[in-house]
Length: 175
Image 1 (cartoon, one colour):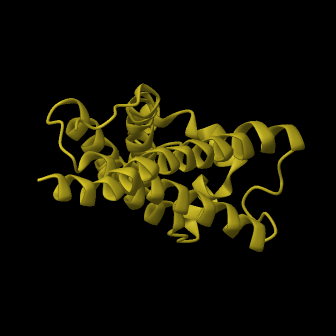
Image 2: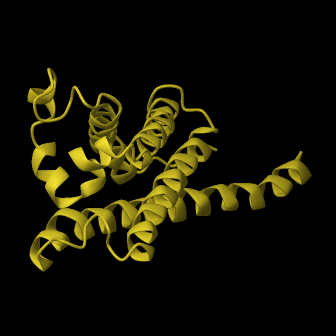
């Protein structure tokens, strides 16, 4: 039986992969990607985001805070899994694709929850200075979207994998 293909999952992974690579590049190329750096032109929007979320800002870099760079490595691993899902689903039609996509979504959800909990337990040390509007628009809403889509992808692909696993004994008996 062919696996189900969900356009919304493919579109989410296709949309977010370049975003995650761009974000990881900013973090891993610091200080060259920051204001005054040779590569700043490519990451100019991060000047604003560094003022919203201090983890991305100059001070965190100068203080040697490694959280953004560590998260960037996870971004790359998640992106690798998400692209693996796309290739496995749309090019090779491999049965492993749902597991790969589930793994990528799990990593994204886990990292986003960790990042959010870190802010909660440090009393908003990197984002608490924002106005309510800026906090919602630039930090809360995007994080909700990452968690919502990742959770829905896990639910959908997990349900499909469970359904497939439950049907496997029936197929064996039929032979």
